[in-house]
Length: 234
Image (tube, rainbow, N blue to C red; front, top):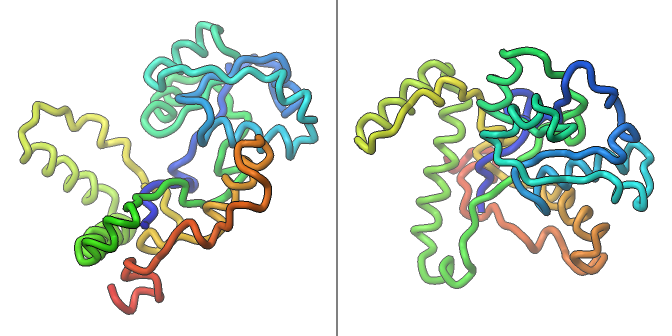
């Protein structure tokens, strides 16, 4: 396994409201509609964590209504007041903020700090059959992460654009200029217990997994990552 996206000061999802909105803290969200890309995943978990840390009871958490809104429509839906709060990240966040009139209430980075939030995974039986393939794939991703982290942003974007143009799929490279970071916390995508325990704890609280049944260290391995021992194998 290897991390491939996450949260940092540049790669984050913010919960935004119109500037004139009365929503400023956790309890202000009661009875409000919160638009996000999907339910039961990252953004809903972050919303619940924010409410819990703000002292909102489990009963009152249910008074906040998360709704699915496609990211491409979130800004418009928020400005038209069809929702009270909209979750915006990446290009959608940057373009919305450039247009003005919105205010961040909180973000996943505010709550969780730097965190690898998603990983590439392989089935156990595939790993057993093709360990060298897994090793090669993981090493390539790890080195690409570190290259993008240590190379000037403009050069990284230029490489992205060149790749898109070379494959000739009638794709627009316009969105690439907004790239800032993958948000991967660990060097080369190395994973830690923290990056699974935050979600495991939330799932336990939701009653989706039995408390204490899932052992976080059993969920992942850094065995194939060349940066697992500090980069000695990179």
